[in-house]
Length: 499
Ligand code: AMP
Ligand code: MG
Image (tube, rainbow, N blue to C red):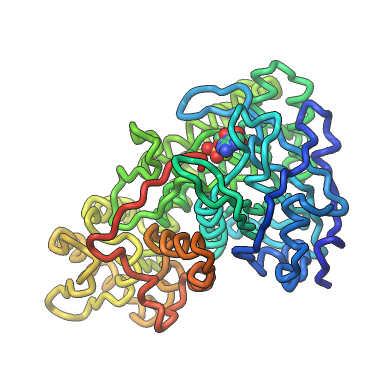
């Protein structure tokens, strides 16, 4: 069933929309390119033969040096609220939608809501300038492409809705940031790249007929259930509010900081989009800011639920010409309960609770107060082995992952009471908890090591890391190195926007 790249089936529906939705533009290929990373599980979405990536013409076809039959490349226009300020015209300044490839079978892209599809955008980031480049070079550096690749495939492995990454194509051509760096492209794969900002563009241009066209297109291609409803636009809003709330609840439960929560980086499908200066929490810190350019910490980890709310308000304002006031209000009212329901459910699972209780919310709140200074991921992973039988509280599971184990003692006392009360078999509890608490997360120092090796032309460390991260809940004996926090004295890497 799998096919060579030149035999992919394309169904370019977005390119059939009016010209004011995009610019037709071909990628500007690099001089010389190589496949730095390739995801066979992503290739499976579009029935692409995984052996294709070893052919010399693979990267040449994807990066525009050779024709890609059936592709109709376009750069999409959109607007966006960036750090709270409206930018009325952005658009794909360095990414090109090569086309919508159709697979033969549906694949799930939102496990939490059981959503699946057969049509996938192939989006080439770092593809060269477009009409929307605003004087920038249209390029991306190898380090940022590797970071996007690792994060996309890792969030998928965690079960968090996300865009995927098919491949990183590296080049010898330098790209200039503060210094010359190796350039690259990443092939992003997602059911759609329609953003909150796409709706904002037509709203602020006051092109309400196009706004309606976009909403109708979105409904008919991606929201078939809502399209059938009596009030389709209101149902679309309601569904997007719920999905966005659930997405951010997942980020909070797994300790993911997006870094640039601008509305142009928010997908209408409720999937994680645009991996730039993101980060996973290591030591728990609600104030954690992963983006060096975010001087005021607007997009700090603990602010993400609030920013999601702001972004949804922007979206619903943009859709207001199609809504009644009460419909807009009713959609927004879904946000808090959807977020709280999803988050508390995920956290109760992480704590190994079989039954939900009213006091859980308070228990989770008091844990988060005691957790700063403790490795967020390993705390939950090791909590699975917590011994509730012994008469003295054993804090040794915090060795090496907490600078203040004593701070957690009062909380652990409460936790012990709770699990004794629940009387779940400890082995069952451990199995259950290990299925939801990853042992491995994408730590910055691990990504950095893989990046430095790839910049030197050796991609084996990147492949090893990607393989470990593809099974984050498994023990993987012998791979302890990839589960541990950065050794003391590791240089902090500085990550900012648009590299
Ligand atoms: P980002 O911070 O990556 O979400 O980018 C925000 C906007 O700037 C998007 O419209 C991008 O297409 C554009 N952009 C970012 N970097 C570049 C670049 N190097 N060349 C052209 N456009 C860019
Ligand atoms: Mg972006």
